[in-house]
Each structure stands twice: as structure tokens, then as C-alpha cells.
Length: 615
Image (cartoon, rainbow, N blue to C red; front, side, top):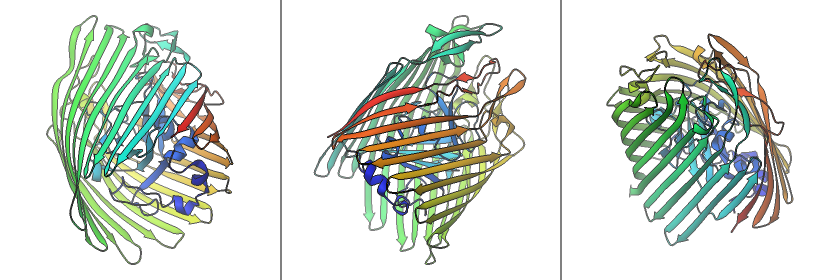
């Protein structure tokens, strides 16, 4: 019911796991050994064994990536790659679901904050620049999510704090046609916290919860060379913080997303393939809270996007291939707010943005095993100008056990509508902003011997024209250089035991990234025997800092321990117990506003039970 079951997956030798297909880096089929990038992959079965329900829970098990809660609302967990992040949004990492951009053009935030992993077939994390293929926002990483096809399964989950969850996938196929459906629903009463009300001076402590709920429906239909796919999603959060204000019954947020995409595959001749994509998306982000001086405040941010993409792959010689394509996007955005004291206002007027991108990539393979990839992408934004993002990579198997990769890539992030046009109370946009760019050099060594796999990555990054804010948004005049190392080790201890460990160390992070941890680590230990599968996993985040007034305060490091115990009742049903933050770690994460004296409270222990059904 889930492709490879747990017993089959964990009996695979590491050599075979290394051959899992990866497509996001070059838009062609690669493996972990041959892909010209730093990549971490999680399959559907691995995610299921870990007990990760949402994307933010999985991110902390990727070298160099980190996710943690901030006070935008009760369900948003912002993430970063390699220790750099602008503002509270996750603007430097591009999220794709079946090729659809899942970030908002208006503010670069994640369109769906609690993205379900149940109907996911595979998640690929590119660590490092991806703009040579994907354009803006693929600045320090790309998260590429592929949804499942051809499976019928469901699960029902219940747990503490009123947690209720249902997930299901259904497929139908006849001849050369198929239909895939997925439904994800969750609702929670939330945990209880001590919050800080900064609407009064001095701030006062109040009690609040973080109830949240959401539903999404996804479909994919194919007949012949045509495919149509789409999604409708709504997620809501109440109480807790909204833009870091604790306003109890007033606090409410909505995240609405809908998209529809039509694709056509064309084979012009042997070796030449084209995929045409036409897509439309709409999303709305609405907030309701109380802000000192403004009273009850409601914000409504809306946008629509129309996209046309043509991707081509040409195998023009036995050891040479050329990939090239064109992307056109048209975005229409607006952001308004209503206040109790000032009435209806505009954060910015209706904004239209036209984006044109062209990319080309050549891959050359030599008899020695050397693989050379050279490519680049040119992007033109009608409101902020143009950018060019090149890449060069060498992948060389020095022996059957060892592979070395040398990579160089550049990426950019175009200023979003908020940064360009915002008219706020304390912050205004700057229409003269330039895109920020990054130049990254990487050296990677992959070693595979016996039942062991070791990957070591060293990277050096230089950011130019970095965007920051004071009372407005500005580009830094000085470059920012930082570097780090990522280590990932996996071992098949026996036919029953498998262990994976990673660690990240970051150095010389820009001063503005004090909210990010510069030490990260995680492990995943899995045991499978007969009808039982037991998984224990944990993630570590080092010291972070938050600003309180004019001072920076260090926050304690922490470990989060999780475990999932699953018992196979029969070939069609599994019963499991899943626990998150089992040690009930009481930890805080940084705020954005300097008015707070306490860190953002995070969720304590969560226990749940579930039943999986396959048909």
C-alpha cells in the first residue's frame, strides 16, 4: 500500500539506496552519487517510518537546514538553509510541489505553512544555489516535492490536545489514462502557553493556546500525453501570536491556496523531448489581531499568478545532452489593511509583475567517468531589472568507492512587493532595491564502502547587495562572506538496524543572522523485525540569539526527541503510536520584534495513535 514496505526498504543495501532517482538539480535523472549538487532525499517510506507529518518537521533532519517557530501565527515555522535568512520569511529557499512554486510572490512566504507529507512520494532537498534552473528564491536551496501516484491508502489519527487527522489517497487507471486523488485534513485544540502581551507597557504575561486546522484536496489526471493537476487548500490558526501580538479571541489567520496546471509532453524525434506547462494559482493571506496605537487590525493580502513554461531535453550525442527552456510569469498582487483608529489603508496599491526567464544547460560525459555540467539562466523582472545565474560542476568517480564533486553556482533573489512598495506604520518599501545575489563554491566527497556511506561537504558563500531593513529596505554596500561544513553518515548495522547521522557547522554568519543556529545535528535510528518497526529520531539546534531592546540575548540549545512504534496487523492494516518532543523539552525560539523580553514558546510533548489502511 506504500510502494516498498518497511521490511523491503531497510533491507536494501546502501549501494541501492544511492541509486534512488533525483531530478530536481538538473531536470534529468541522476543519483546521489552523480547529481551535481549537495542533495538530501527522503522517500515516502522513510518519512512514514519517522512519523513526520509536515514539511517543517522533516527540515531539521537535512544537513544545513533548520526550521523553528516564530510569531507570525500559530502554524508558521520559518526555515533557512546554511544559516542565512532575510527577515522572518523563508525567502531564500524555493518550495516546489509537482513543479508548482509554493511561495507567495508578494512577500516570498510559504503559501502553505503546514504542508502535509502523507501523499508525498519523495522530497528532494538541494543545498546551495538553484537559480540556474529555477530563477529567483532558489537562493540557498530548493525543496522539490513529488506527490504519490497509483496508490490507495488512508490513515486516521487521534491524539493529545484534541488532535484529529485524516489522510487518504485514491487512484484509478484504465488504458493510458489515470486519476489520482488526495485529501488531507487536521484539527487541533492546541497546547497552553504563557504569552507576552506587548500591546501594553510594560509587557504583561497572558495565557493562550494555538488551535489550528486545515484541509487540502489535490488531484492529478492524465490521459495520453496530457496531464492536469490542481490543489485547493485552506488553513486557519487562532489565539497564540499574530504578528507577535497576543490578542486572545481577536487573533485569527487564514492561508488559502488554489492552483491548476495543464501539461503536455511532446517527443519531436528520438532524443528530443518537450514539456509544455500552463498554470494558474491564487492565494490569500489574511490576519486579524490588535496592535497598540491601531486597535483591531485586519490585513488582507491577495495575489494571482499565471505561468507558462516550456522545458526541452535534447540528447544530441551519445555523451552529450542539452536542456533549455523558457518561463513566463505574470503576477497581480494587492495588500490592504483596516484599522480601528485609521480606517481602511493600503500597504501598497495593486502591483503587477512580469517575469521572463530563459535557461540553458549542457551536460558532457567522458569515458573516464567525469561529468561536466555548464549552464545558466537569465531572468528579467519588469520592476527590478535583470539577473544572470551561472553554474559549473565537475563530478568525478575517483574509484568505485569514492566520488568527488566540485561545484560553483550563483543565484539571486528579486525584491518582493512588500520590500518594494510597502507603506507601513514603522516600515516603508524602497522601489530602488536591487536583487540580492550569492556566489557559492562547494567541494563534496562521497564514500561508500561495505555497509557505510559518508558524505562531507564544504561550502563558501559570498552575498552581494544583501537586503536588510531599518525604517525602510536597503541593499548592503559591503559583501557578506560565510562558510560551513556538512557531514552525513549512514550505516546498515544489520538486516534489522539502520542509522543515519548528520552534523553542520557554520562560520562567520552575517551579523543579521543572529536568530539562526550555527551548530546543527540529527540522527535517525530504525529497527525492523517481523511485524514491528521502531524508529527513534532526534534533532539538535545550537545557541540562537534574540534581540531585546538594544541587547542580544542567547537562547539555550536543545534536543528534540521523537519516536514512532508501528505494528503490522495484516497486509492491509498497521497500528502505530507516534510521539513528538518526548522529553517535553521547554525551549524558546527568537522573536522578530525587539519589544519582547521572552522567547517564542514552542510545543511540548505530543502523543498520538493512528491506524493505516491499504486497499
